[in-house]
Amino acid sequence: MTVWDDLVGQEALVETLGNVVAAADRVLQGEKATGMTHAWLFTGPPGSGRSTAARAFAAALQCDRGGCGECLSCRTSLAGSHADISALVTEQAVIGVDDARDSVRRAALSPSGRRWQVMIVEDADRLTDRAADALLKSVEEPPPRTVWLLCAPTAEDVLPTIRSRCRCLVLRTPPSEAIADYLVRRHDVSSALASFTARAAQGHIGRARALAVDEGTRNRRREVLRIPGQLSGLGSCLNAASNILDAATEEARPRSDTLDAKEQSDLQLAYGAGTRGVSTTGHAAAAKELQRRQRLRAKRIVRDSIDRTLLDLASYYRDVVTVQLGSGGELVNEELRHEVDTMSRSTSGEATTRRLRAIFATRELLEGEIAPLLALESLMISLRGADG
Image 1 (cartoon, one colour):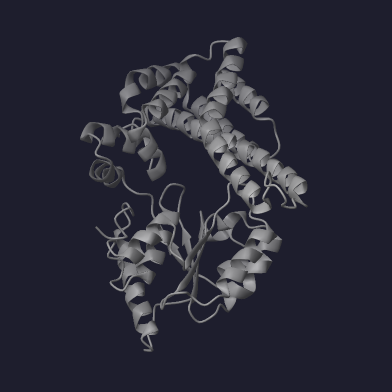
Image 2 (cartoon, rainbow, N blue to C red):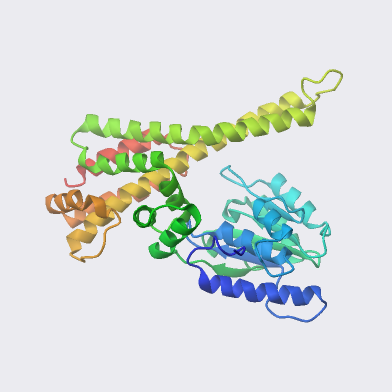
């Protein structure tokens, strides 16, 4: 076992990072070495493992054996408890300037150990302009043993002033075979289930993992894929939209509740609320701000769940297009080939293309302020009426 084991289908990247870690060791020994630099940008499609790559790289930089996966340094690094690895992670729509400034202050500290101070910024594409400006100086000229690792879908998603200071590493979409092998090896699922979930996840490792280990997730996906055959009238369109939103809300609630409870507990502890003789000045304002941020995060989690539903719907219509074009390849939803064949004969390629466009347009709309139910109702009506 090594720190690289959870990087699926990224053999070339692992080789590159291994060489960089070796160069970093030479730098620590006072030698001149090419290949190691102070700022890195990991890019790749959703689910490809950007954050996993950054955390594995951070762990390897802290390990005397290049990422053995077994020493205390590797274990604490991967568990998120290493003293010299900090991660800026947000569940909000954006990363604000205050969070960025906190990371800059941490980056200015010398590592407590004898290796590196590593700063990870997940979703660097969510940095506001002010947050990016706050990071810029530290990313450009960090202390000698500080390393910044940023993650984003593409380099273009990061402000030019930031990305120009980073060395970019691109992750590919993992092949289904590699994902299936990973699920069998790390999560002890059957080969048949691993193959099905790897195909259904379309290269998204986290989604494949969820489908493989959680029957409820598989059942929700199955219900989503029934929708195209159920849109027979206006009432069915409105019901489908309502059901999607209800399922997303239900799926998101446990995660939101867990995060909310921890944050509220941390706030109580920080202000000593409920402790006799302890001043709680500022607690009410902080609690109000926390509630505001939690509401925004809850909305984001629900919208992320809806987005996964829309991607599953898109996979169905892509299968229809595949059949209509006569490509003869394996379908994403191979288990629904009969239904896909039926729809491919009853509609035109142009109509299927319009349906796909409507789905992706709705995904973009949901990034804004539109009410999710309204967007979903409009989409369901479009999917039913695309043949017109």
